[in-house]
Image 1: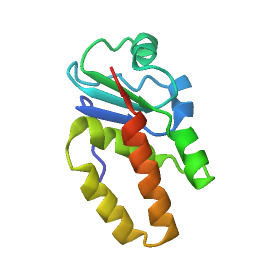
Image 2: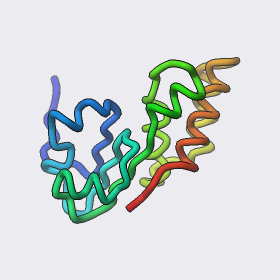
Image 3: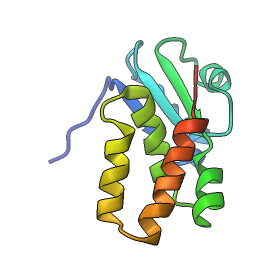
Length: 124
């Protein structure tokens, strides 16, 4: 069974093409956090979607993924930005889990992508 979430605390938009189709801030709590895979500044995202409260975090996860992994696997960099801003878990814990789950080259590339995303994520 699936449950709908109508007033989330955090929304993470991994797929940048969705930003042209839906408003990811719709229903987001006023003090909520919006994390998007975008090269735009947080204020541009606020303006586009009319979200004046909470936090907006942007990270160009698509570019990070292509430059680090050579493929459009932008889930880890986007998730890293969400971890950074929410503090729900330590970034080091996430990296440790990734390296355990994906030992070797794949894990190491994801580690680099996560670290870069944490460094480059913009909060506004």
